[in-house]
Length: 64
Image (cartoon, rainbow, N blue to C red):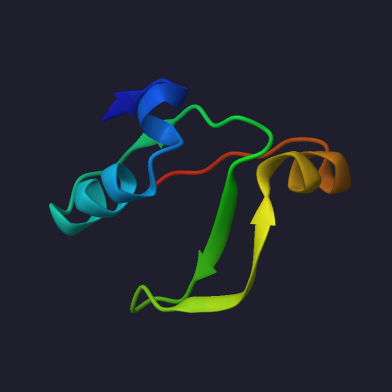
């Protein structure tokens, strides 16, 4: 599934897509916060703003 940031910034939308077992790529605003997840979908560490990740590593790509 592909979606722009209007959907990508919505954590419930992303969660539901993952629950349906669908792969996805979405746009996100720099201020959107995300969590790292383990293989069971549990949160790891603290949430991080997408912009901070992009600044740290140069490029960010997310998908499920």
